[in-house]
Length: 385
Image: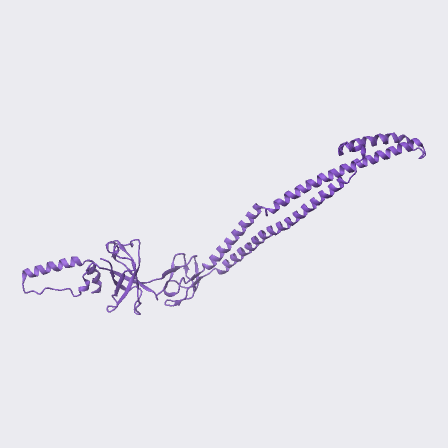
């Protein structure tokens, strides 16, 4: 009779109407007929009970499948086996090929990391060299400035700048040399030759001084230019390695990391592992069989934590139910057993199928040892009037 309970509980008013009609007709036909009574008065709803049919299900259950297509090389479990979370349940062929791809990806990762590291190492060396070049250039400027500051400009050149001094002194030297040439083969004791030679030597000395002065000034200007360049180079080096080179090296490194992760994921996808601790309820494949992604290979369930989920709770009744409501649960297969529980979840969306029904989850205070997955349950949910 238990399979009739939900009908009576959800349609009590109709039943009472039919009973009243029968009683009225019976009274009209015979005044001595006994009025019938319901065998189970509890079936009459007083408005504080919402009843529904349900099914016993594991709180955790999963249909397992492979992520890659392939041939099954090993199946490590059988139906009914108790497994721990993370245990390998099944493995596909192809490990060697994927392992080689993973090794190659790791090699590229090491190379990419070394390239990036070398970029920074080379920059550190360049930075040190740049600082050394700057210091040396600065010292060169100081030295050139010292040489120029300590150079005594001849009196006859003090009103001339260095370039003009070289030009004027060169003209004087040429004149002195031209005047001396006719007498260069004369005796050293020749007074004219002697006088012209002295003037030539003086012109040569003045010219040498002018050239020296110009050289000092040129050396100083060149040193200053080198110092400016060294300073610009050093300031640029302080900013770090070339941003474009760094970006390229980092992109290569990130790509290598992604390749390693993808290769590791593919290698891991060769195995199907237990998502949680439970019992292997079904094994749907065999060793050597070709399987495709999404194809069910096993069913894993946590049979230690069973609960009841309603199957025919209509939209009118579900509106009266709240999380936390107390529930009495009975079972078709266990007629003498009643278990207490509470509503822990109300589906926000109606279930697919005929009619508008909502799934309500009931957690039981205790799990009867003889209760099994898939058994029919009947629930009386105590609701507010």
